[in-house]
Image (cartoon, rainbow, N blue to C red; front, side, top):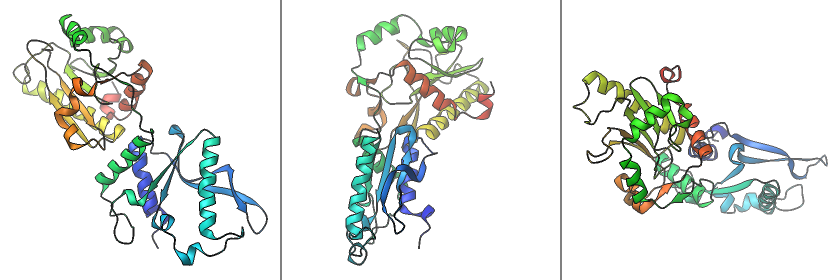
Length: 319
């Protein structure tokens, strides 16, 4: 028999924890007021839930094959409550739903049929595909609700660009007060040479820009090799922080810009969320005109910065 900690249930719940970035969830949690039927001693004991994610106020149940497909020898056996075990399981399932609703919690069921399994219904454990399936299910249940998305105002963006180098303006603001660095542009990290900050017009959650503090315009020609490698060390650290904090399917790193606008060279670190269709990935993921942009509230941006900052390497956190 597979130990519970190595079970398909635990595997799926660990993927949920990755997608939600809530690793300290409670497995087989028991709420003191969610009670089963009386036992032989007449006492009612708390029912377990497969996984409880307190930060998201979420209960997740994983239904294996025997939950969805009756097994006569097990389901027809009588429970101490005087009903069959199959009937009791259905009663307990509904009891969990009703209790969760009454206590302001959401409950999501992940069925084994939503994943790739063998003939016995055991998961094949294709981690990337399973993570995407988990993310899609959570998104469908509005658990992975991203910040509000609004239409991209190209004219307003052009007016902002025409005000002069936005990175140099950000650097000047950050030098005085990192938390007042231009509205939604929140500084993730800075030293004397490099600055990392949230994109002001993100198409995806967690989009970060990394740029030299000094105004440089050529991606290679304006740097010595040592300067370039030092900046790329920061790019790598930010990409790793985004990977660890947000659990994306992939991290994109690219440098765009133009000599006609946004000439200050910078690198985009873009986490591609799990479950995005292939046709909507890569450059399509950055298409502001088609996708719109995320309108992060100031407190959401600050929370995102703190979430990413917690995963920066020690040499960056010491500064």
